[in-house]
Length: 329
Image (cartoon, rainbow, N blue to C red; front, side, top):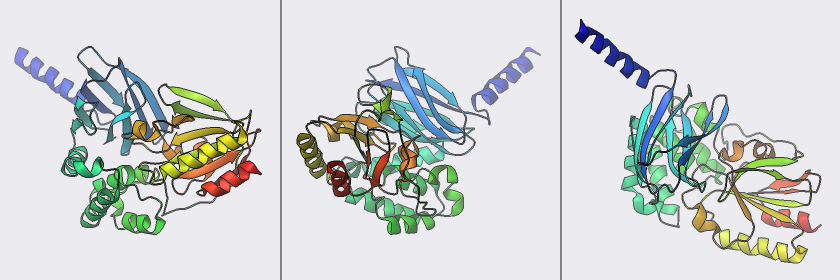
């Protein structure tokens, strides 16, 4: 009888650990340099942002809910994402590794994340290359050869950078079987080539964004004119943008505030890209779907917006020169 009770107890524990109405992420991390992990994800019901305690051995555990596949970013105390995974109810992921090394955290627990890990390991040199052309080509090849694999959708969403080419992205996305591109993921695309919508320019009084080197901060847009620059990595013309923005600040005597926003889930090279820039840097974990940011009608990255001192958006578009001329006028 005792053996039966023990078996029933073990079965109950097993069922609780892989409940069909929730998911779980367990990890053991090295070089985290903090006592907490921040977990950010977009679910069917909105954005979830939680801080999870890490013990002295680097262990942590997070439990959440998402009926549909969701992108989850796990961040250290500086706001840099050291791991990005896809989860849904019923998943139990285990991650282990050194957060100080790019691609240094390994994930196990379901086929999708394990195959994503294999792809990243096989193309590691491409991920660390400042020129994204080789990685983009490898992803395009994978997508064309695996139309029935959800990893094709995930690679396009997280690791692919040529989102400005609407025709190519739309063709790649439409080539994926509908079962392998759930709406919960496709709605996160920077460019929505399947359902592009035009929006009216809004009035924004505040934006809540993650500040580089800190936490979430409410940014007020009603005290002076503001130039918002939103981008994804790698930004090919970053040096040219840096020069133009600095020239604008010099010309206006600093009267125009510059808010630089990384609008994608992957922060792998964020700190390297913005090194030496004097303006304030933020991250929008929800990308173009971030609250407030989504009202700008972003269809590609980079994207620029100008607001006057009342928060009224007077320009929102992909052309930096037009944004600059609007500021000067």
